[in-house]
Image (cartoon, rainbow, N blue to C red):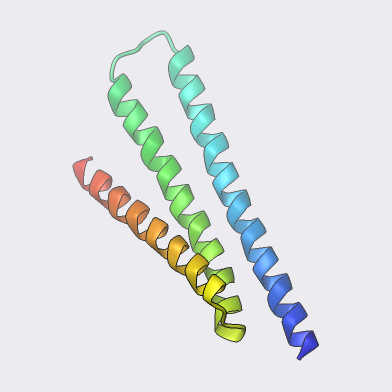
Length: 109
């Protein structure tokens, strides 16, 4: 049982790290796009550009949260606690809201 617990903890940490890397990568790309847009001489379509950058960032956030949720789901299924269920529910709600807003924004474009 101790070995299983170690494997679950390691997979949870690995998935959380992957999720964090994905979110940070999305932030870096969005920031780079924003700096490119702001440093450009033509400011036409700034609102459209900002919206595209925001949608890109949201998509990376949703993907990263999916990795966080997978790690907590595995951990909660094997070692259920009320705290784990609460964390999993919180991540699921945040991911669902972001996913809904992202799909709504994508339909506008």
